[in-house]
Length: 155
Image (tube, rainbow, N blue to C red):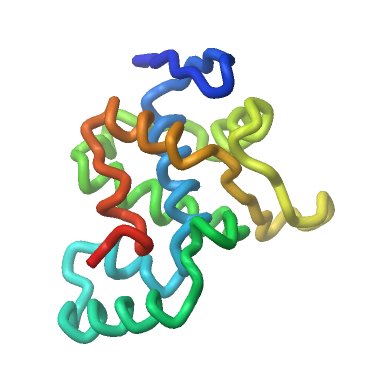
């Protein structure tokens, strides 16, 4: 398994390939509304013209997600975005890791926060607290332009 060392606030972190994709997916889940998932993470997402105009209108009426801060997301949504990213980058067969263990590791490293109650085992919710700069640097090391997957930067 390939590991990458990255720095944030002077600390060095070693992340596996699957953890890197998972962290990028978590960042997208925290900073995109669920209604944009279809647009960014499916191949044939239907009426692209209508969706694009809706997203523009939605974006102009709401504050930037990067101004209001990260939003919580359910683990099922994280899994969907993660698998869609793996599929998009032909990595589905290379990153067969235990997602829940990876999420726990990212929480322990301080990149994710669990925001649901500890007793909520069915649908835990998380929030990505990694900075945009760190997430962008991480994505670039993988050949991903994270701005292409964020509604605040899309046109």
